[in-house]
Image 1 (tube, protein in one colour):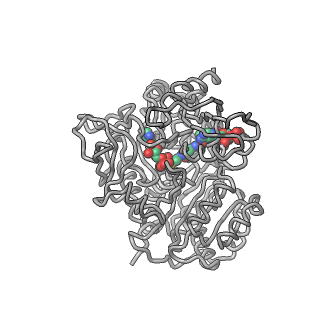
Image 2: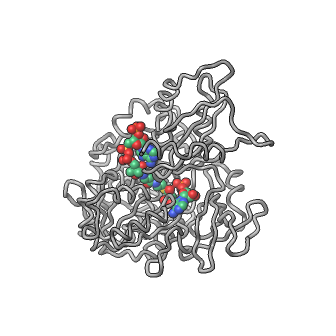
Image 3: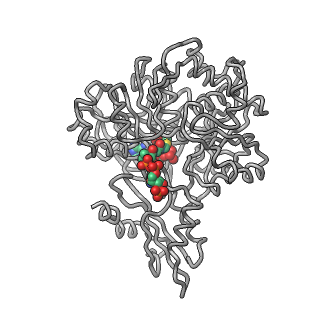
Length: 507
Ligand code: MCA
Ligand code: AMP
């Protein structure tokens, strides 16, 4: 027996005194030291009663200690469940309850607010702060830096990542050891990562992009990461000279392009810039090449599948496309109604199959059956076309989804929240183009007959209950929503009507 993810990502680091993390204060952490910290975390988890298969929900600030907690979960055979730091207590309550987590780790500053949530879910609560201190750290500190790694099967869960759904209820995507190992291997190979690489890491580590793409690739290749707490243009400009590679959402690259100091000289030494999580405008791709001489390498993925396709490292990186299927991954474009594969060149729903495709949604067999076919193909909900050369282009979304700065927002979730506000008869939420975030949230409210809406109160409630990135940035009040003859809200009409609201604000 073995532990596939540990064997693939960590085992080779025993005794390696090479740098794994470059920290913002100029300090470093070696691979061996990180592994020791991970072992201490695994011992602490065991001491706290966390066993193989138990879920560990984690809502903490990005730090080396938080990353060591991830590694400790893998070693202890637990299931890592990272949560967006922007989530409010109202949102966290659902994740902790639904996952049946055995342990909930949060920031010390939010422990008081989250204690009742943990208690209601019969889940232990421990804390870990940005400085590495907290009641979890108190247990970790006293543990040995050796741990007998728990055996796991390839089909055992390594992580549970919640992704919102079109019905408004978040679904936990169950990711196995096989899923994560196979994807890291495909990416290391495709993007040519080696132990010489220094990855500039400014992404959050609670999503697939920052954790499984950036971190797992670095760990597997044995390289190092410039591990920054968040994306901050000044810090990124200062650190780029020592990086060989960078991964980011399109907003990272548009923000860098807004900065004249981001020029050819600054990045002449870089090996690769990779983009994903949201569409990179072809125009951004072109501007980036004009400015720096680098062609951004765009790839495409999902929480449920990790990465599916990538532009080639050596061949043509084609602007506006997401490239070819990764090694071991199959893709096909299907008719949304019949599910039958469409002739090459036609637009339909993209389906993917491979060792990267998740095991299903946590405790949602019906939802799993709707989206994961018996033959292993996963219905992504993205609309795509595959051209004669095999390049995949994502042309739109069959699912009602807004992507703002790389974060997904399902309009249904925001609509359910708005509908519940006093005086609101109904609401519709759509995305509108945004110069910084790519898209942002527009809410249209229809009041009850005779009611006057208290928009300030609604805004305050949204601040309390919704993660900041989900909050509507433009609110309009209409007497009625546009509907078609079937009674369905015509969101396209609303998208057209509000298409310029954020452009105007920016201008
Ligand atoms: C922050 N704010 C946002 C966003 N981020 N609003 C809309 N969209 C956002 N993405 C708001 C906050 O609520 C706050 O609002 C204000 O902006 C300032 O917050 P701050 O945290 O300082 O913002 P920032 O530093 O400017 O953050 C923008 C960012 C960040 C750097 C683009 O959102 C980011 O790191 N995004 C990366 C997301 C990511 O990793 N996605 C991968 C998902 P207020 O002031 O009103 O309170 S994985 C995935 O999609 C798949 C698998 C894939 O293919 O990768
Ligand atoms: P998530 O639910 O966070 O896993 O987001 C997955 C979704 O992000 C996909 O279904 C796509 O709609 C979108 N996405 C990710 N990468 C790209 C890309 N390179 N181009 C267009 N859309 C993307």
